[in-house]
Length: 188
Image (cartoon, rainbow, N blue to C red; front, top):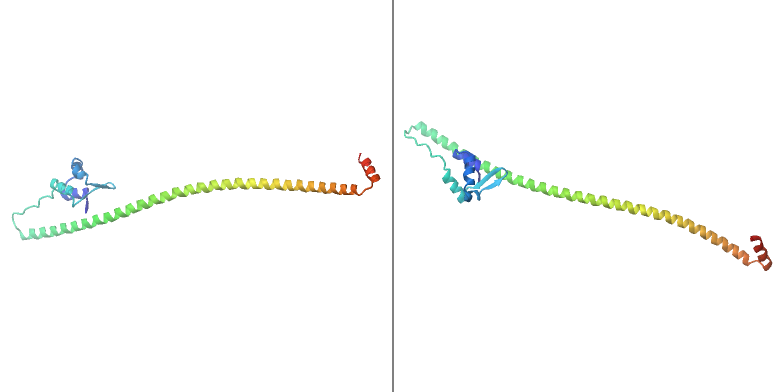
C-alpha cells in the first residue's frame, strides 16, 4: 500500500521537510517514491520503505516501571485508540487512492473533451470554407443563367429576323420578272 511521506513523518513525530530532505539525499529511496499531485508516496512493501523506517523508526514505547493497574488500563485504552486510528488511517489512504483514480479519470476525460472540441472547431472552419465555395458557385450560376437568358433573347430575335427574311425571299421567289425588277427598284 502506498503511504504518503506526510503521513509517515507525522506517525514518527518528525518534520515532513526533514524526511523529504533525507529521501532526496538517498537515490535508492527517492527512485522508489512517486509524486501524485503535490504529495510524494512510497510503497510500504518496498526495500526503500524499510530503509526509511530504519532511519525514522517509531518512537520507542514508554516503559512504565511501577505497574499501577489504573495506568495499565489507561495504556490499553490508548493502545486500542491508536489501533483504531491506524485502521482509520488505512481507510483514509484507500479513499485517497480512489479519489486519485477518479481524478485521473476526470483529467483524461477533460483531455478527450478538449481534443474533440479542437476537432469540432476544425470541422466548423471546413464547413465555413465550403459555404464560401457554394456561394461562389451560386453567384457564377446566376451569372450563367443571366447570360443564357440574354443569349436566348438574341437567338429569338435572330430567328425572327431569319423568318422575316425567309418570308421576304419566298414572296420574292413567287414574283414574275417584272415584279422582281420593280421590287429591286423600290428598295434602292
